[in-house]
Amino acid sequence: AQTVTQSQPEMSVQEAETVTLSCTYDTSESDYYLFWYKQPPSRQMILVIRQEAYKQQNATENRFSVNFQKAAKSFSLKISDSQLGDAAMYFCAYRSWSGGGADGLTFGKGTHLIIQP
Amino acid sequence: DSGVTQTPKHLITATGQRVTLRCSPRSGDLSVYWYQQSLDQGLQFLIQYYNGEERAKGNILERFSAQQFPDLHSELNLSSLELGDSALYFCASSSGGAGDYGYTFGSGTRLTVV
View 1 (tube, each protein chain N blue to C red):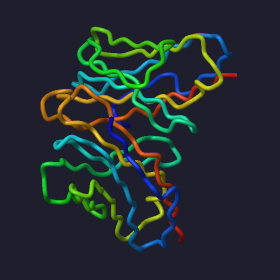
View 2: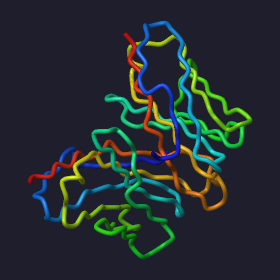
View 3: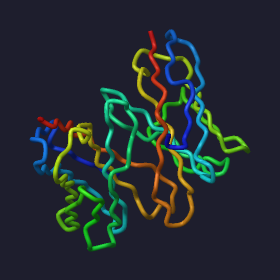
């Protein structure tokens, strides 16, 4: 079974600064998807960014980018120019490719991101 | 509004009771997934349905069951409720086709068992 580990229960960053959230995973599969989800106080789960394991290029969505290191099984999220609205729980998640869509996400325990004004 | 509708938003019930949570997927999505978020267990995948058929099972208890109806809405039934079943239950949907990996989550149902 796959596991996802987020080793930082909480991170704090000054507004407008850059912060990196860490995620490592364990799998024996070669093809899979990785995701970062944001959960603000409203509890809504919001997709931030996703990465297909077969793609070497790191995904980028505006101020959000990832550093995907497949050999190291590492998938970190970098948030540039942090804004107050970025304050939330951030979850790293893994999804198998081989299931053909027949599987769920495996989540890490989450990192609570605090933005200091 | 994500397009995935979950009802009710909040539910308070007593131990031993049975409740039903409802989910309407985003228009056009055939797959529905149920997740449980609790302080103890974090976010856990429970079960997936695709076009009316069960497709994958996660850490779903035997006291829990789900189904997906012809109109594609899904219901999660929780019975013989225990205090530890108190959690936020999410539904998510996706198209479920080849290459599909995009989930859309609903806003969740907060279940409190007293």
